[in-house]
Image (cartoon, rainbow, N blue to C red; front, side, top):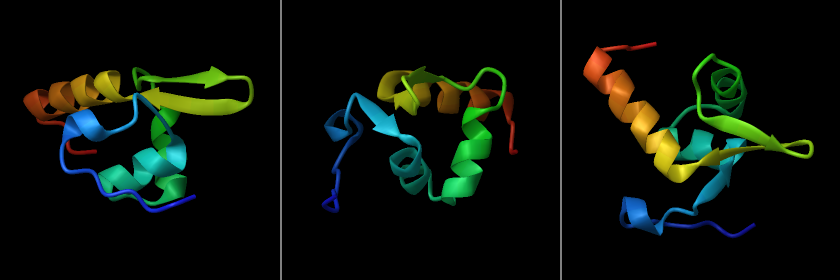
Length: 71
């Protein structure tokens, strides 16, 4: 897998893996997997793969920031 450098939100892939999402958020992969199992987190399965939709991830982050949720 090649290293990607995105200049803005719209350049992100529409769907991303947990490792890609974790890297984007600056957290460890294991923390990423913990996060996707939290209630309300916008992840779903395609077969055995867990994926996160870019736009729903942004909306989730925006909600958390508005609520002032740190953890």
